[in-house]
Amino acid sequence: MLLKVALLSVLKPIDDVRLFEKIGRTFLEQNYELHSIGFEGKAKHSSLKNVYFYPLFNFKRLSIKRLLAGWQVFFLLFKIKPHLLICASVELLFFCVLYKIFSPRKITIIYDIQENYYLNILYTEVYPKVIRFILAHLVRLSEKINAIFVDYFFLAESCYATEIPFLRSNFLILENKAIFSDFPTLNEAPNHTIKFCISGTIANAYGSEEGILLFKNIQKDSHLEVVGRCVEENLYKKIQLHKNPHITINIHKEPISHQSIMEAQSKADVILMPYRIQKAYQHRIPTKFYEAMALGKCMIIQKNSHWERFFITYNYHKVIFYDFFGDFDETLIERIEQCIRVKLIPQQSIFWESEKNKLLKYLEKLAINSV
Image 1 (cartoon, helix red, strand yellow):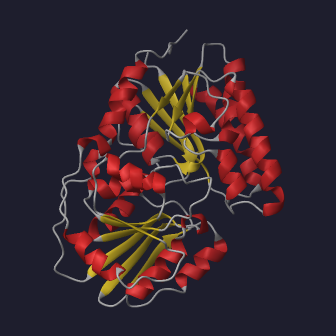
Image 2: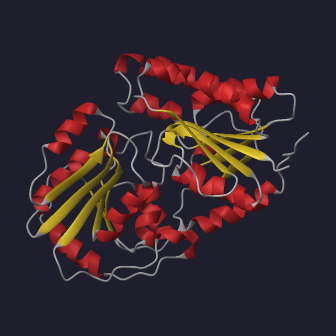
Image 3: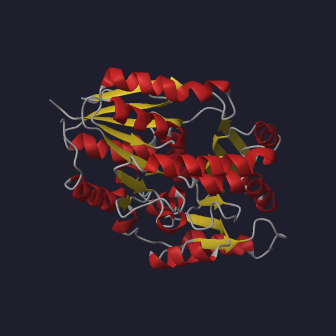
């Protein structure tokens, strides 16, 4: 009998790039049966052998339905009967522990920490200001209590090893590096209209509108595509107002496929990354850094000493560090033209393969069985 692995998330789609495409597929290659439970994504069914999707959730972040999501998962787990749970949502952690307690067989729980939820809640504007402090501390308390029953931890960022206090020595850092198959070719330096791109999560915390405003200062003989998911209603409406012959807006309130994001990035000459520098994000390495390096793209990134050191480590020079929130610098246009002309061959260490090898070695140590 194949050992069953359940991938669990509330806000990530069932075919999430990290949880399914990277971690899940690695387990699948090691002859596990894969069950992905999560937000309703583009994938409804899988053509892969021993892979099953359960698109359960489709609601807003602040929703009564979200409070009931854990119970949906809890009862579904007793139908699936997995041996291993990989949980990527803090609110599902309690229900994983509950399943572990009441299951007649030995259950292994891995908590895949993709976010420092405590800092996210405290320092971003996703939740109303009046409840942030209380909610952040309740979430951290829940993590600390449930962590007692967690067998292993996967960390999406190396900074989490020092930021998160309840970790023991049983963790593995699996960074969000690029999937090699997404990058078949590298574009040559353009002899056409310069194409810019803002992609992925469109949010105030990510400075998405500031990126558009910067482009408007550059606009002449250029084009910008904004593609991704935006769950912030006010920002969604504001972004739509920026549409003009030089700016294509392709944003959605529901998750969009990773392939759509990669297609937009591959067509661009310059990728704008105007992240706000705050405690929740300043030491994290966005997946888009790895993907843009894999594509050999020029990037304009908000100034941050931690990120500057990151690109030095990978010897990647097609990066312009710029203050998106200050006055426009007229020399930027010339710097962009120079940046685009630079040719670099991406290092193999920016790809997920290096993290996958770490995971495969780690799997040998995991005490996962069907007892």
